[in-house]
Amino acid sequence: MEVVVALVILATSGLMLFAWVNQNLQTASRLRDAQARAQLQLEGVSWLRLVNPARQPQGELRQGELQLSWTSTLVEPSRNEFDLGGNLVPRWELGLYRIQATLKQGETGPRVSWEQLVAGWRPANVSLATPAPFASPGGNGGRP
Image (tube, rainbow, N blue to C red; front, side):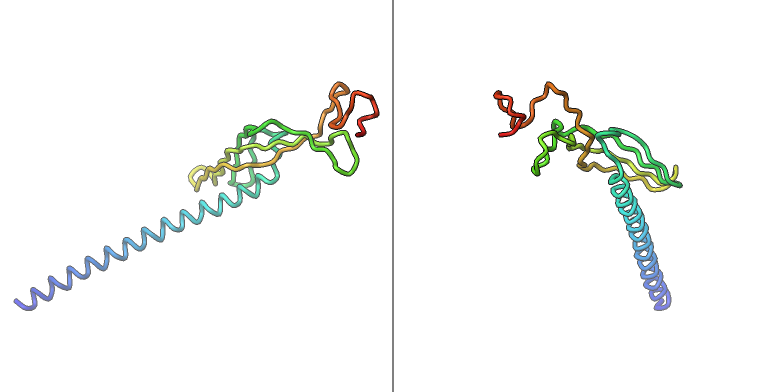
């Protein structure tokens, strides 16, 4: 009878041990997947540094198995950049864009989506009808 009780205790503790090991393996697998997604997102954020949303509001980049796709929307109206060193004609038009990006690795690999704010720029197209920022009606060439 004591042997049966000992075998029951041994079997029960063995089952609990196997359940604990299985749970640890599942946790390790989830951690590995989360790490792969985090690494993929870091790669995608680095790629988005190469994108100018003012010129490419949406698009796709591929390199090997990696595929990055994005769409962007202007957060607030674009503004002209004026050089404080003396130029009164803006050289750049700057805008803040919200980008929704997705990066996936192959068809069955990890996939990650995120949003981030990115500055976009393009050369300013200033028409002659647009007054300089400090232009006065007296016609002194836009100088204060």
